[in-house]
Length: 114
Length: 121
Image (cartoon, rainbow over the protein chains, first blue to last red):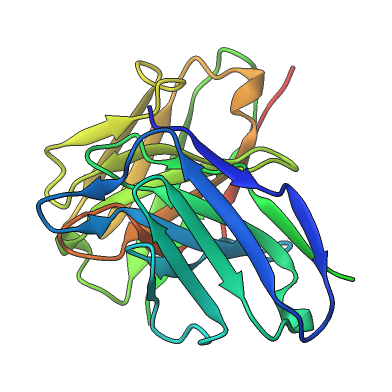
């Protein structure tokens, strides 16, 4: 199975600042035939189910703020949250969906306000 | 509006069985692959099982293979997870989640609120 490793496990950022969360896969999730990275990012607030933010590593889901952006390719990916707001406090997960299941998630990164 | 409502969770003894269901509405259920993802108390997300749109291809995490069975009834817009030989470490909130695309890639755009399964003596 592909192992997803996020860093850091937690971070605290000032309001209006920028948060950067990294995700590394144990093997490439780039599918050469369509040049797409099979990597998604989710946000989970306390007591709520996860919410899809980004898919194909960098495509924002409909309705998601443009303060959220995804980048990277192959095995290394980044979720960036700019102009941090209080409502962004949550746990963020990356997920690979390369090839057939099992799909795997990173361990999660807890984002707090400094 | 897409809605996914899970039910069937509860307290069960180790070695017992339980059947979870997920009622779907607001989209063409038969066109999308569906999944179960669980979250143990205070822990991260773990993908558990998936099924393609027609119900002919099923997939499982290694930790549940041979114990859990996923199925769907497209005539009733319902997803099921039959769980047997339950262990204490199966204790979690179980979420039903829909594939974003009819192509069934595996990114999940709608999730239910979850149903809690507690395995304890």
